[in-house]
Image 1 (cartoon, rainbow, N blue to C red):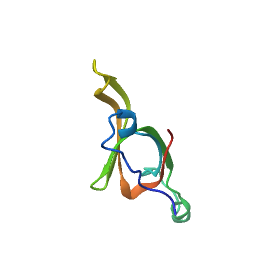
Image 2 (image 1 turned 30 degrees about the vertical axis):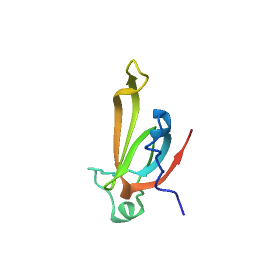
Image 3 (image 1 turned 135 degrees about the horizontal axis):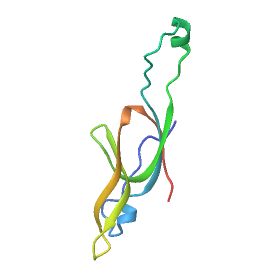
Length: 98
């Protein structure tokens, strides 16, 4: 069985343990406005995307990831950027990188 959930150590004082670096493989929606045969459409596959970043959460059917961050004077995360929100239902697998 493919792993679709990562356990987050929310009590860790180190933010890198609370927001582990992950790689997520997921199915994307694909649309095409051109004319094609029925057999061509039946043979079409969903594209598999890969997103890498820090895992913020996996709750209420949504996985939240951020790629960039800024730190405050205490070395804690102040703000995040380059965010991705993925419905858990389209996740193929997720793995912890660090």
